Amino acid sequence: MTRDEIIAAVADELGKIAPEIDIDLIDGTADLREEFDIDSMDFLTFVTALHERLGIDIPEADYAKLETLDATVSYLEAKVVA
Image (cartoon, rainbow, N blue to C red; front, side, top):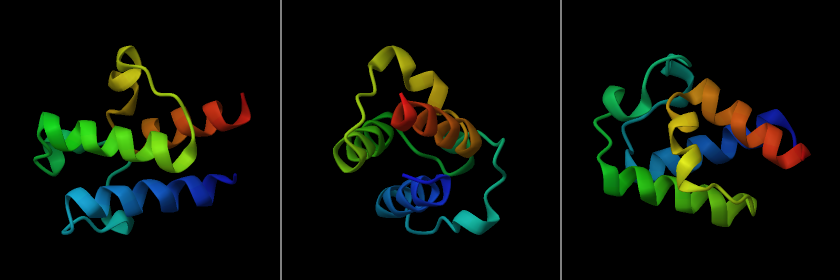
């Protein structure tokens, strides 16, 4: 899976929980939860959707590594390669 495919998957799943998000306008270093007012349940839904879509195990201990768009993509990219 390429980085662009991972970004597309993240954008798609973010769009399901926050349709107003335009992935092209997201500051890659901004906290996703704060920037888009994503609550705990929506964040859990997002992480679960990424797990199911990409087949990547994302333990709860790693949730903090998904704080920003850049961090999320890098985390998932490392998991796909591993």
